[in-house]
Image (cartoon, rainbow, N blue to C red; front, side, top):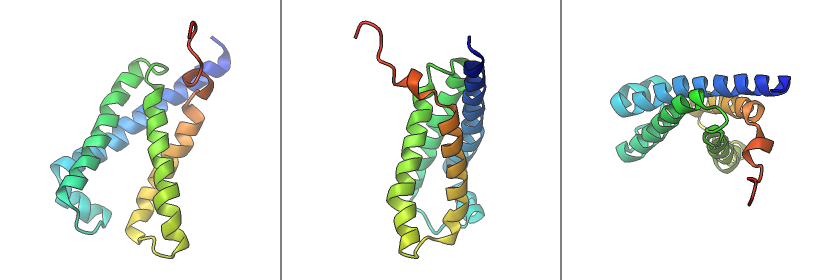
Length: 137
């Protein structure tokens, strides 16, 4: 295995572990202790259905990251999905709110955390491998 692929596999595992801890922790918090999470993060009152969906999605990423730790390349599309929704959130939500001067202070920590995932995923994801055309197709 080429030396750069070993580094890539390490980065993949780091991002799966980071997702397991970060998304898993927040997801469980959103589902099991929504009031505490709202207070701790300084969020305004949340719709319990929407907050629950976010918590469930975060927990799903955490569970799939366990599988990614076992088979990093096979589960790289999980990190691609994570990268995609976070980039879309920045483009469709964060930037327009910043430009209009309406970005809420409580969302700053979330934006910073999401940015760390974006940077880590961009480093870790082996895009040529993930998007390679399968043999025989």
